[in-house]
Image (cartoon, rainbow, N blue to C red; front, side):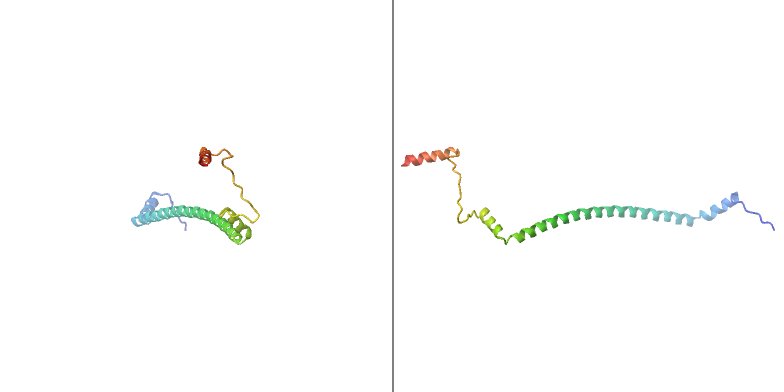
Length: 130
């Protein structure tokens, strides 16, 4: 028994294959499959863009957090220094203008240092009033 091999390249085979493969339902399934693939690819691209945006926001927020933590540490140190005598003395001198017991305040003489002409006029008025 000798079997003849069918030639796959024969015209009859091609027509038979085309009739089986290119039916309406198979073409519809193929188009739906391609559409699903394109939609999934588009969704993936959109998700990647969103992930990149979120990563950028995370980096910005981490940077802001580091700045806030540094400010918080500085304020904690300042809070710890509030109860010290040196800080109280500094505030008394700078804000309230206080001086120590054995200290003197030196004020600059505006007339001797070339003050305004109104100062010399006041001087003349007081000497003429006498």
